[in-house]
Image 1 (tube, rainbow, N blue to C red):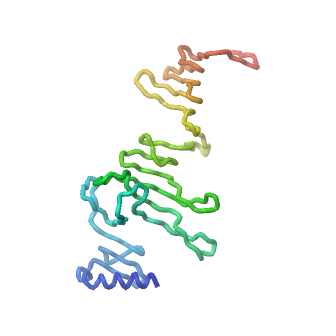
Image 2: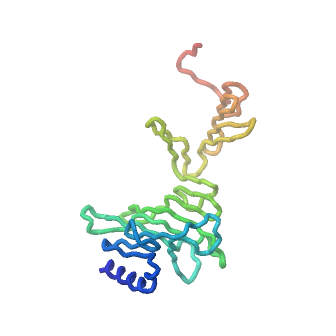
Image 3: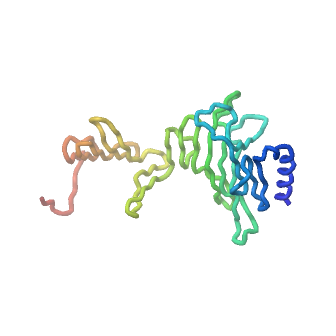
Length: 231
């Protein structure tokens, strides 16, 4: 019934614009806007949008969320609905792209974007912010308010020859990590645990444990070896 109503509304609109011969409702139910040969349920064809466009509403498809105030966390969304039951009898929105204001200031168009998926929490269903893009260019993964151009809350993995290795892991308080410091003469890799430096590897190949090294292996403290060292 909803689909029939939708088609009737489009047909009524088409009475005034179909003379342009740029729109089409096929017998299959596919709808074309700007094209008489739709290749999907809804196919929109219009001029390309320039990346440098400064027009306040400039897109091939606009989804507008209305309201009486500028509220952080509330905006316009594009949702994706798929079956939530094995027999397809119940469908839920399980993913969405949400765009909201990035602040509550008046006459301000700064926005932020969320890539969200539905997840189960305490027997209910909530939205997880998998990726957040803010108006200042920062990107957050697993965090809503990133403090840098890329901030990740959790572990980062990369795969090499089917072997998965952890390259970064941050504790809850942010005091345990390793970092790469670049530079023409002072490049190094540093490992920090509980707020203090534990090991450094310099661009010369020198390794320091508990200190910045001045030799190939420089240790601040005692060394214990359970077997004999040999050349």
